[in-house]
Length: 109
Image (cartoon, rainbow, N blue to C red; front, side):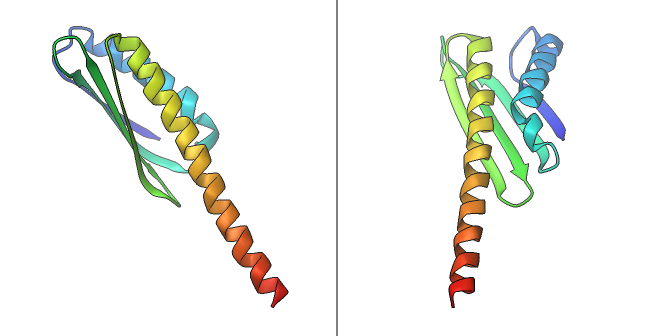
């Protein structure tokens, strides 16, 4: 998995990149072979809000993205990485369920 972290107007650039990569790898580790590229953007969203946008490419699903906003920098990263991990799991399960239901209809016919 390739991870690109883009930060805008933050002084903790290297420490923040390391933290984001660690959290994202932890969240997406079970989908290791399916996730190609991940792009993370962390930027200010108003005077007291920070926005985190994560966009990933999953082999069988295409592009999946989540966006979170909060005042605490590390909390917004934690929420966004957790959300993308749950979303990928849910979408893969939906894809499997749809494939299984089509196969069962073919077998019945």
